[in-house]
Length: 379
Image (tube, rainbow, N blue to C red; front, top):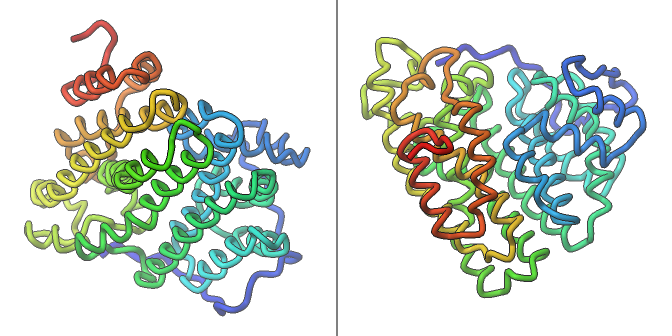
């Protein structure tokens, strides 16, 4: 097993005192507009500028969503990222994380809970952008409070489901997540990704007149696979990153043992071939869910063009990543990951909007991306 960082223990029922929390300055590497928004207490600008710092991919898609729908998806993503920052923080005891999860959920109705959450995350380790987000969570809640009540209810329902699941896994694996079986892997992906698929689909129904009850019901049958496909691709490409930086291994132990390896040796050079073979089931699962995700996208009415584009961009990136991943072992080497080129990203950002209204065009583009790196003018 990987070495476990030292852990800080605190009573589960002792929430942090907001008055004792030290002020943590924003990292100088961040967009200076984030600091300006914080200084001005400008919730809308803070959410707008911190989003690309915590996720460039989703920032690209969220920007195309209009009005309250765009704001709802923006705020929902930031809330999910806050929960993820707590879950992923190494060296923090499960009971401490439980307190933070509890305060985060209470923050939807109680500003003092938000203050306690902010006080409690001051000592969390993590990337500068993620820490900036949780340190100024009050601005996210303030922005979220401006949304219509029914929209807020959708987000609260599914963020709560996600956080409850995260808390379950944090306690199940207090020394770092170590998924044991394929069934447990699917359970984990439901909590951290499937919930997002349901939330987005509920928001589409709430805000897109072209998505009626019948289409909504059909979309809901595939929305979980849509979100979980993206999650599995991310897990596959970042096996080493998750193991080294977050002390988490999501590749099930049963798959590794079936190929003569273990989670403790998932990055061992002498077991590279066996570890790569062990990923086979997850790769098959990813391809299956990606096909379901493509069907989900094509079922979205053409009139809901912004929603189609929001779904298309990460789907194209996922197909491209899988294409490269199946030919790579980089994700199983220390410090390694699988990334598509910036050139291809830019090409897909241009091609996606051009073809998003055409189901046949989307199918052709996906098949083209599956074969080789996408370039304009290259068959």
